Image (cartoon, rainbow, N blue to C red; front, side):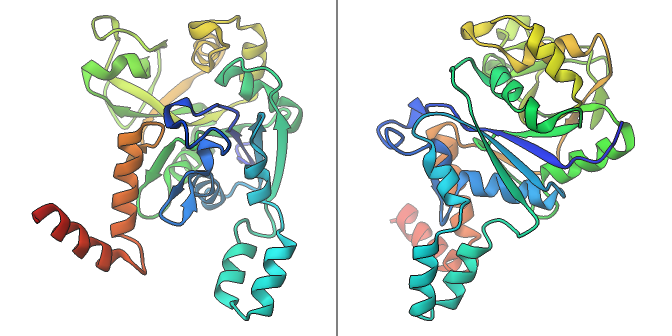
Length: 291
């Protein structure tokens, strides 16, 4: 089996109901953090990890995502005519020339597991990444996915990105069952959104996965679980009976941009660190808070 990760799957078919009415006609993945949409941050992280094929699992009202990664001839012509060279370069370099984008329609809203299964015709028998754009992760250098790709090149095992969560928050995560503590450990089991008293640990899975192609068979055999959906967590639990699965406590700061609070926190932090407006925004924020 190859230990090179060439493809990443981006499940982007969700309705984004927590951000209504903003997401009524526009995908939640297109919500901007300062001047880039969430999905672009996710794709940039994948590019940094050496991934060359971006597989988007889309649904209705998601054409804005494919348009964002497509060539905008009219816009480019207008920018070129106005000699706005820096903006033109930004628009043209949203994805590097060596990166290709594939769009697959998820025709039924059957959950994350089903979305990943939809990618099988493109992924085939290769190991691959799954990236949830809701989770914006900033480590200031390599990126979370680069860390995981490097580990996979040595282990060849499926890897789940995890972080410590408050015991009161276990019902919002898939929680891994582990026998030992450490940055990279083997997973004995995984439970989807357990109550605090039932959680096997407080180590929650977040939106980054490296998976072997064996997950596709497990997904095809997995019935509907929580929420009457095909749960990726359930298929990963089945995969553990066939091969090792590791949990990795990644380096970096995660923002849960699927929640309004996390989205606002990311917006403020990224604005403060923005190369053009950071200093000015931080000064305004200090005055706003103190005044």
